[in-house]
Structure formats: structure tokens, C-alpha cells
Image (cartoon, rainbow, N blue to C red):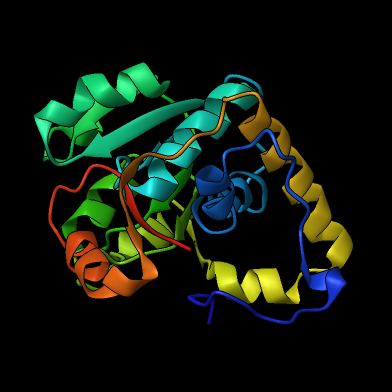
Amino acid sequence: GTWREECVLKASELVAIPAEIDVLQAAMLKINPFTAWRLLHDYVTLRPGEYIIQNAANSGAGQAVIQLAHALGWKTINVVRRAELIDELRALGGDVVLLDDDNLREAVKGTEIRLALNAVGGESALRVMNCLSPGGTMVTYGAMSLQPLRIPNGMLIFKDLRFRGIWINKLYEESTPSERAQTWEKLIALARTGKLRAKVAATYPLAQVKEAVAKAAEGKRDGKVLLTF
């Protein structure tokens, strides 16, 4: 509903973005950064310096989680499928970057982890939930593997894990204007100082929307694909 050159909206539905924030960055704030903020604040009250773990760490939301956690004083364990992403995510602020394989649980052994973020599902989600401390919470916000989230009975019985889900569009619509404004204020402040920034792989005019969609569907794409007007 937003790929258009003109539209009529109520003023109350709009968010004023400071002119010094790049318009492309502003256009991306509502989805991945907003999702990342809610993931980090709505499910577990994190202590200063505490670790969280996430798969799909190189995704748009994953990179937003890294940057927000770094700015807010929390640490991230970031799980990726490709070794070439490790240095890149460390440079972004990721404290620990690990490959998504069967060695994951051993690699984080002894670390208290009360919050896990899952955007993949399937075996990846199972490996990540295995890293949670007893009583921990996994929040699912995506299913990149197209595989279901499978929860062994022992995760509920012996580890007492909690499993939650988030759909940011519904959450945004159901939140109050005041709640939305508070989140926007924080995100805008971080974007203004450069502490929150998303990669852009390519931009296309609206007339080239087919090319833009094809580019967006490419594997190993390094950043978002945006339409310009």
C-alpha cells in the first residue's frame, strides 16, 4: 500500500523525520529497526552487558539488532551461515559471530543467554534454542528456511523455555500513538547520530519496479533494494 507517488493521509498517521537524516535511511526505519527495538524491549528485561543470541544476523533486522544492542549496552551472539560474514558483522558491532552449525551450543557454553531471536526456523531455530539458559525466551519473527519451528518436549519440561512470536505490522497498528512515538523518538535519535544505519544494495525509479523486485529476490544481496520517486 505504499508504492505510490502521492497519497492523502491524516496528519496523526505521519512521523516527522529530521531533514538531516538521509531520506533512504528514513524510509527503512519503520520495519527492521522498529522490529529490532521491540524484540529487544518487549519480552525480556535485559541487564546491562547481557548477551542475546540471534540467527539470520546478517539480515536487515539482524543488523539493526546488532547496532541497537551495541548502542544500548547489551551484547550480541550472532549466528550466520557463511564464514565471509563474520568480520563484517564484527565491524558492525557484533560481539560474537558464529557459524550456524552443530558446534554452536558448545561455542556459547557457560554464557547466560535469556533471549533468543529467530528469523529462520527449522534446524537453525533448534540449535539456537539449545543455547538458551533455563527459563529463557525465544521470539520468532521470520521463517527464512520455510521450515516449521519444532520444539522438543524437553525444552518445555526441563528448561522451561518460553516461545513467543511477533508480527510488526499488527503490533504497530495495535500500539497507542504514545507508544509508537516513544519508539520513533529513540530510533530517530540513533539514526541522526549514525548509530543506526541500514545497507542499500540498489535503488530504482518506480518505472523499473520489475527490475527492483528481481534484484530484491537475488541471493546473497548486500543490502536493501529501494524504490525512489
